[in-house]
Length: 415
Ligand SMILES: [Zn+2]
Image (cartoon, rainbow, N blue to C red; front, side):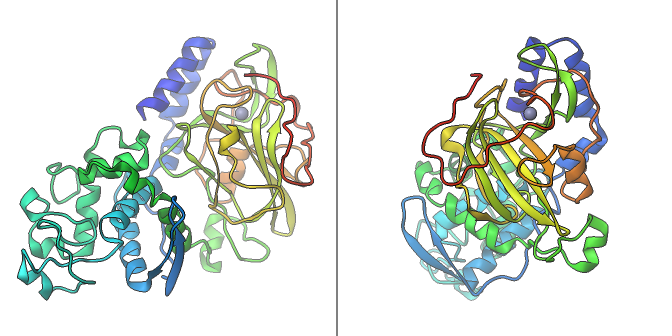
């Protein structure tokens, strides 16, 4: 949060006094704050019988239903604690994967009674127990406490509602965990010397989250969250993880933050730390994935929603922050890129755009569209000078639709 505020503050210093009023207004807006609440967004669906996963260093293995059930417990516990959100749950999964491969390990050598509780085998590291290998002698809890997976999850997340009240520290007790590398954050809770061990499990944690979190909106629920998809197969998700962003610049006319000219901002800017995962807003097919003037790198996805084609676009990723290719089929919530600041941009943010009709359609207010479809609760855009990235000319600018994977860079302007 401090880094995000710093980005805004820096932009305020550089661009026009009026920006201050608008930025404060956005930060204080109750609707915007409501959208930042992190609880209730990670609903676990059916736990699969198994899941094939691959670590960052390329080793592949299969998680059993028992391991995935423990993952579901961690997700469900984290979802109920304000401030955890998907980023915090991912860190917890990385920690439990590294410490125990998501197994409830007894430790009968040190605590014979630990074998009396349901467990997935015996571990022997010091007096460590369970999913997160927590030690009674370090104050994490009693043997009875620590042989309960839900208790271990609550202790890992910590914070004001945690069982240990900051000693030992859970994730929420660590200042600035949100802007740390996830491996470093996991290491900080586990007090281990090897952040790379946790980082290696980042793709596994993502795969678990994608497999376990329900992406189907039931017909009964859909009436309250917005229009249903024509095929009923998917829902819409916010393009950044809960708690990772602040609204930096709305759709509409504004004084350009770099050129100083009045222009039209065709998207909505969400400031977030560089490297924050960008998520596909809905199921669809990638039509653009590469450099486009002003946008830095741009991803465009075409969706069929209620029988109509609509495109969503994601701008300003660095060259290394594009994780999809033209023609890829993506699913709602899939990690498609990483937040960057390439192109005409004043700091790391996601420029998110919505174009009914498809890739070269005319942009509409993306924030209103997300809110209408139940993916956010954002204020209606007001026009005026503000911070953020370039206004991309008029709403009718055509994007080049590329026929295949990008091989040669298209010329771009800006820094
Ligand atoms: Zn923008």
